[in-house]
Image 1 (tube, helix red, strand yellow):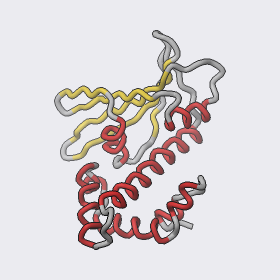
Image 2 (spheres, rainbow, N blue to C red):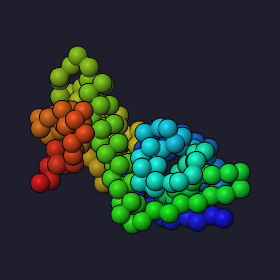
Image 3 (cartoon, rainbow, N blue to C red):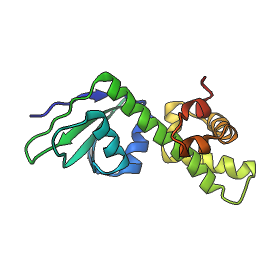
Length: 183
């Protein structure tokens, strides 16, 4: 039995997920299909397990990403499947759980951005080096296509650093207020 539920994910997370998590990719004309195996003991797997709270053993999860070029735009969707046995897939996530999953992926993206820039600029605080790091991140994940620019990300990097995002991260506190300036 296969049940698929779409997860509404902003487009900028799709290249991030497929680049960082790997997985098998199939390309066909203007379409792309990527399937990423998620171990239940990994951070992402534990997040899913805690949300679903199954009363059975899960071998692994799959994130399935579908992308298609429509004109100059790329559209994508993401689905989660749970693999119990060789023949059975099942997933039962509520809309709240799907929203939490999206926020979890978004948080991973934000933390990766901050730590990427921090590592790239190790030993240097020059604005030129920070700009170079941000552009490298933008290019790696095609962020211009999704409306991001260097000024936005630079502002977010400094806001995260100024407001103690690293402290919040290690103490499992909410990060979005410090990264995006939302209160």
